Length: 452
Ligand code: HEM
Image (cartoon, rainbow, N blue to C red; front, side, top):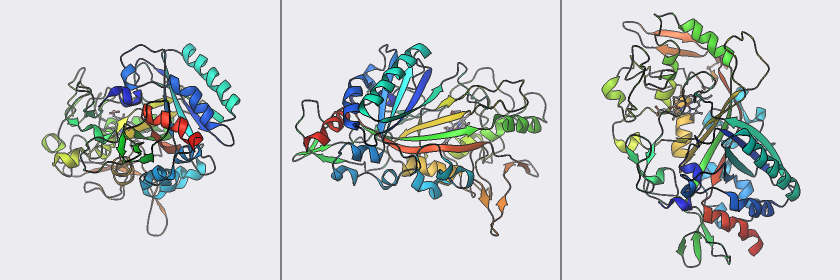
């Protein structure tokens, strides 16, 4: 894969850029194309990954945004069903019901639909502020709506419950250099146009265009592949109830000091070490072990419970040892936290919103994200468990008489297992699917509407 063709988000978790912002953009009656042409030169490509840039910019678009920019219907109708429908319309599949339903979302529902996202990553708050001021001026000049969600990567890299984030990222074939840990997945798992674990790759053909910019790859007579080098982005704003988590942690910390307690809900220790490999106590240092096998280390869930968040989110070989199945549902996570940390000494709410802005890239929303979210995290039947869902994110389960079933988590114990009642810990506050075009496809977008 040529890194210069794809946006930097595909390669970088932007650790050198700890302060960040998600700009939520609504073209409305404004000049979306004018706005895009103006910001296009600042978009960071994968090739700039190793160079120093004080601020990195990536762009993504919803279907509505692509349509507003004039992307030909030929490509609009070729997008996969999940993307065309949008995340809010997939709420039943994803388990976004009750308090998590789109009705309550701050963005992404029909009522609060967006056109585009600008993801800004900066080395420091000053650099981010300067760029945000420019973005606000541009939004005003081109008449587009702009709202800003500030996010960051904490120095300890932990999310608000206190667990290290982003430990296990898939390793995929890019430009020949190894990146990440573990078995290499084909680039087509995350980038359109390349070979994937499954044969087909979405092709988004568009008519050839007169333009002075480099255009996407030619794929037929007067046809270009708009999708080549692009990726789908999942965005979910997930509010975390830190007080509820800490009180649960106290309730579960009934073992000897250092015993797993709440780590069993996650399946990893706070420093990221997997319980499947380190069941007794949190190791001071540990090997990445990205490719470990649950079948080999923990076939009956004694170490990492079957229902733990990481086991549901990536069951590895728990169902099936065929590498094609094991690798078919991976996500390239790029999450950041929002809102200040809750002080450890605090026993009551401090009035601030806080949570995780979950971002994940994949080439196939349905096979990758929707399987993980809808079938595994929210699947009430999972690896022999019944009537329970992910301990962090699970939806409210409703019984046959319409009653809400209380949340619970099964800790395998021998001879008897133990059931723990859980509070609601996370609430969905917004979400959408967006498309992250290649650099060339961005150029096409900037010109296509006006060329008609
Ligand atoms: C507030 C919400 C969430 C919290 C606090 C959370 C927390 C964590 C933590 C602490 C880990 C282990 C460290 C790491 O690899 O990052 C993890 C792993 C993971 N999470 Fe989440 N997560 C959240 C939401 C989600 C969502 C919405 C998804 C997908 C739909 C997801 C999918 C995953 C995956 C795929 C892994 C890697 C598992 C592995 O490969 O072993 N998470 N999460």
